[in-house]
Amino acid sequence: MDTLTHPGGSLTAEQKDLYETEGYLVLPGLLSQEELQPIKDSLSGKVEGIARQLAEQGLITDLHEDAPFEHRLAKLFEGLSEVEFNKVGRSWRERRPGFYDLMSNAKILDAVESLIGPELFANPVYNVRPKVPNVAAGAVPWHQDKSYWPDANSNPVITVWIAIVDADEENGCLHICPRTHRKRVLTYHKEDHTGTNYTEIDDELVEAAIGEYGEDIVPVKAGSAILFNDRCLHMSTLNKSRDRVRWSVDLRYQPTDQDPMVNHGAGFLARSVLHPERVATKEDWLAERPEHVTVAT
Image 1 (tube, rainbow, N blue to C red):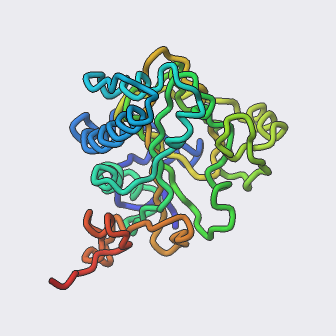
Image 2: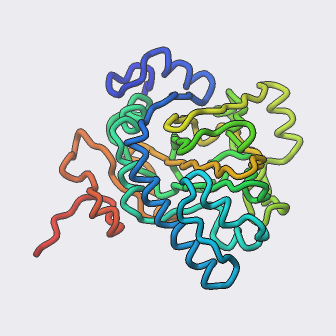
Image 3: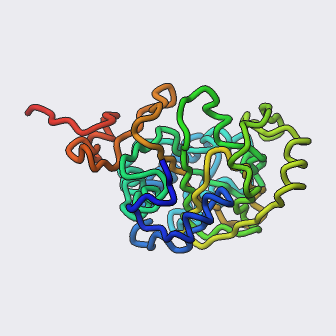
């Protein structure tokens, strides 16, 4: 498919050309605070559960119920060890209503449609990442997303990385090595310094890529999106702020005629011109159905 001539979607010809050339595209302020609110509400519910769990375990005495969204999780783990934080997970992939609201947002789908057409499948690999201050697991090493599904017959898979709060150099924004999306999957290993088993590209290959293409540091405001190919090298650094959580979510989309990666979970049909009646509703997604079905009552 010639992505540059596809008539649908919301991106301009210049934006599509930039994506094709650099391997990534920044869409500042794509989503409003109102559009972010459902995912923030879902995450606030998750954080509330964590707070009560920590209290039941006798690890905290203050639930910090009045703390703002951007600060509460940091306050809950202030003074606790990295081990305690890692128990709640380096990333969250749950079926909460706000997650579906975000993944099916028309602005996101319009942007992705510009690049791969209107038959869109939401990949089952989506992650919400709470990067709390000075926890090693918050630093994600240089990698290609493709390394997490090396045998999947899916190309392209487009990552849509969304800042739920402002992401800057202090709290650990993305770093991208541009123009690496046309490279093969580089050799990698499981890193061993954060306790997360992230995949990490071998050092000499990272150095060579940065030496050839450079390194872009990409701070963005809340609601902004960064689209990139799953072969594009990227990473993020430690959150060095005092008390801010760098909340982000990475969503993934691919054409519907490709490997749905069922071994990673259940994705869903997010948009279709050919079969609009099959597009999964929130109820379908919560029930882990990849397409809409009429349930007998």
